[in-house]
Length: 326
Length: 106
Image (cartoon, rainbow over the protein chains, first blue to last red):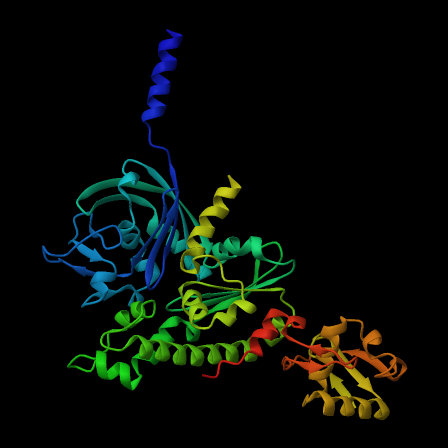
């Protein structure tokens, strides 16, 4: 009898799906997820009721959340008419964005989600928004799971953890250059944020808008109504060209406006944080903006520590930080 | 002459006229526009031990006293000669001040 009971218990355990830890960041430009299977990054825009020709994959998923209309997310849809997440609050979009990031292997599982936000008072609302049952059809696969616990964290602390092995003793100024905002955090040696704030003026969108106003770019990319697709420019920042602009011209345009952006960045730090800058031991530059600027101005790596794959450093680091506590 | 020391926001240094002349002479050599900026470089180069960095050849320590002050100021330019003849580079700066000194002209 004892042996039988043990066998049943072992069998039950073997078939049970364990609770999964997931790190999630509902960024303005990208939805980011990291877990034991790796990172998933999806461009944060969607179109409802895509045509039958819409080509979906893991980074461009078609998602039906609890009987709502199908939504097509990702970089492909952001090339054309789409609803951008950057015009909506992160709390409002948290649940639907997380649903877009679910994996088939989440089906039947309880999920513990580490979720980050730059706005400390919003962390509790983020927690409430994400918790609960999810019934999703994603790329034709039914996924049913539950977010049983949300661990809210400040955006940027994950990046700090990602860069930790490269830091010298002493305090750190961490700058997470996101699309809509940049977070500037002063972090003490114990890893505690002791000062800082999100700064919209330094979001990468300001660089994108400056490029959109460039006469060459405007001449070649605007439509009949005079509108320039900012999402297309944003994506092209990571590519060799934009539309009919030559590779050399596009590189020159990117470098020119990145230089202007960096001068404004210097000016902000000079006027707001000159005293801090004289005492911090480490400067960390991270986020999608870090990848872009350090590729256009490699000398930034002389003064900044740029974590590996800076665009996902925050979501990866938050996951690894939590796992290190287990 | 009162010199604001940006390296430490709690220090304000008051010096005699004789020492002020020496600081001005040193500023002419290093190209600093403000005495506080020069002191900042000296402190960064030699640590908080102001007495050591200004003793001997540059400034007599007995001619200065240190008073608390909440004053802060801006960082300094790169590559200026120290009073000992060597050249201060971005390696001598904190990463923050080195970033502010970077040139992004295209």
